[in-house]
Image 1 (cartoon, helix red, strand yellow):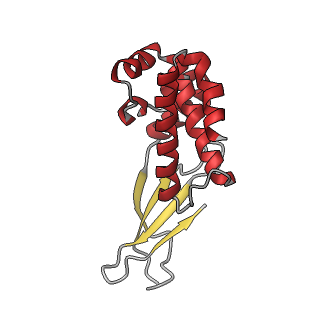
Image 2 (spheres, rainbow, N blue to C red):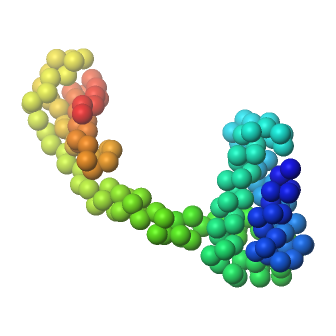
Amino acid sequence: MLKSIAYTALTPLTKKKHVTESLYRYIYNRTIEVCYKNAIIPIESCDKTISIFKNILHNTYIQLKSDDSLIKKIQKDSFVKKSLFTKSPIVYSPSRFEDVIEDIKKRTNSKVVKKISNLYKCRKCNKRECIIESIQAKSLDESETTIVQCQTPDCNNIWHMN
């Protein structure tokens, strides 16, 4: 079943049976790796195994379609190296991930502000010696998360507030 799915998707792209077979073996072996890593028994009739296989097939297909040199490398070596498929899908189709890229840029540019304050009282030691740290942990349209840490040497209690 998995082999027919792979052959249907990859044969029009590769146009050579031995290249398609190499890719199928790579995807199948990678599926088994992921299954074992996630404590899933890799049985071809298992829905989770099929889903993992299809995800790996899809990512491989996108990379092959956007980079013609990959097929040539596979034809030359006659087997698929894992290192050929190490790039993120964002590299191959950035237009699909514009929102994600923009969010990542905003998060990396956000500043973490640390202040020493007596506004908050520690619930553990009841002292007002705290460091306040405000961070944008979630999306930018949500409020900042404030992390408060007691500065008493014996306490060092930490709590979060939204």
